[in-house]
Amino acid sequence: MKNLSSLIVLLVLVAFSSTFAQSELKDFLSKNHNDFNAEIQSNKLFDDEFYASQYIFLGETHGFANPQQVDFELFKTLNQKADFKYYIAEVDDAKAWMLNNYLNDGNENWLKKVFESWVNDTAQWANQNYFDKYKQLHQIQKELPKNKKFKFIGVDQPQDYEASNKYLNHFSGKLNSAIIKTLVQKLSSDLSSRNPEEIINSAKATLEFVNQNEKQVSSALKNDFNSFKNFLQNLSTIDENRDKAMFLNLENYITSNKLESEKMYGFMGIYHVMQTSYNSGEPFVHLLKKKLNGKSKITSLVGFYTDSNMMMPYTGQMKMMIPAEYAGQLWQAYPDFGKSKKYLPVPFSNNQSNPVMEKVEHIESLEELSAENSATLFKLSAKNSPFNAQNTFAEVKGMMGITLTNPADKTTDAFQYLILFRNAQPGIPLEL
Image (cartoon, rainbow, N blue to C red; front, top):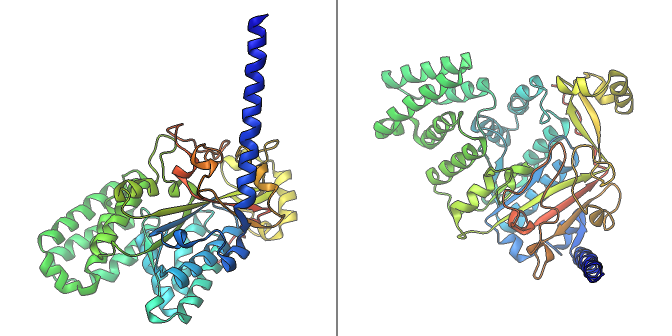
């Protein structure tokens, strides 16, 4: 009987503790949230500490339209208010070169070339909203004074060997040594044949020659010398872990261009912007944080979605999972998808009761403080925040799940802001 009484007391204490913790969480969130568009104007949560960050990253789940506009507004604000002039993109350096050309001359052929391989590969990046965002970025670049103009940094592994070859040709015409011309021709041939092992070997051989003949090659390439070296180093990381390669590419870019003190903003997939270890791996921003070792402040924002629709490739496994009859109903609801039938606007729920792609525990606490068809910002890292002592929202379960490698890590070890997108729309398939 005594043991039973002790058990009842314990269960009551556990229930009370859980209820108190949830009450504390909801109370904190109610005081630390704002509509994203209103926040851009009011700076209620984006305070001086936020703008003092040297690196700010926004993590999305690919396939939604709404994060593209949030990305645009956030970067525009950071550029205007805090002198952020470098935009780290989830593209390789060949595509970043094309994007920078587009920023400078407005020729949409550059932009179309960036998206061409994504369209051919039925990638989620191949959406009209993403394409239009770059047009918006070009428009503000045109209007910015010289001291505010920005530049894209491509940190990803090679995404398009044809684009890489085009970038290589940009350098090769300026090289006058017979030896390096032979090395570059071999590299170009390997890119055309799409043989990763041969590309790596050729890139390393060319890089070795460049390092041994730096004065000669530098004299020929002039301002393009650092870009050429970084390009060769990028090609040399094809067989590396992707996030490690992204970090090495950024590190090379910063060092070669002496940008150690510059402020930088990045927009990429949610996993890459996490500041601690997930799924027994090391995300890109986690590696950057380890390298900086507290010398510079990093802020990460992540997006979650509920009652939304996602643009998903309707290929391979998806065709096996989703019957043609249901696909037809989705195309009827979203006619833009029915034109090519390469993608589906898949319903995406993040509710506890009916998760389709993800499940984030206690997300209803965020929904209660947000409106339909909105993007609501939550600051989690304020003083005395419960998220400094617990990992609520830090893990995502389901098909697209990410799990903390170290269960003792807290939410703000991983990210400091959260954006809840309600009723987000799918990206619209791009037709070039």
